[in-house]
Length: 241
Image (cartoon, rainbow, N blue to C red; front, top):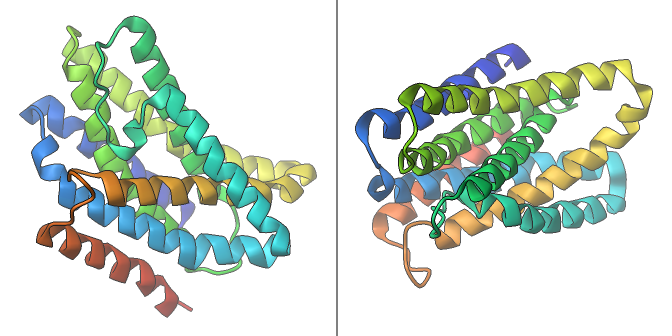
């Protein structure tokens, strides 16, 4: 899978996910199985593909980068209010809060794109990572546009925000790919960035699995089915040479 195809896929699925609430209204009720699927898939590709690749490059020191990324994601939630986990903010959306949400979610989307531009030794990593990010983009964009639809805002402005948001991850991937080739110092730094993003993915995936759409951490049969499907598909990358 080429980088160009990967970014086109992510861009389109982000537009689809964000466009659904704009065209059809709020869709939160049907998101629990989708969140379970994306959470388990993201967890699987992080543990099976990303983290082994990082440890192969950095050795035992990779654990430090993963921990830093995990706790940086906790700090990022101060701005995004957990929208990367598809949480709807409970408070009134003032301009200040909305700006904080957009900043936090855009920064998260940028960090998601960085690993996509990295040249992995294992050819299975990029397609698996692309699928994980792309599937995650659907509920993420749905939640963002659901929040924006609650505000008195012109549809054209909502679509413009969605378009800009859909471009953030592809732009980050292109920047990562270009900078890694142009600046030798980034060839040393990039594995640490990937380690940090892996820690961020661990936090996001586990939070989605335990908190999405159910109370008291209860798992319905549909959530179990979606979870197992995502896990099985994430393990399929092991079959790629």
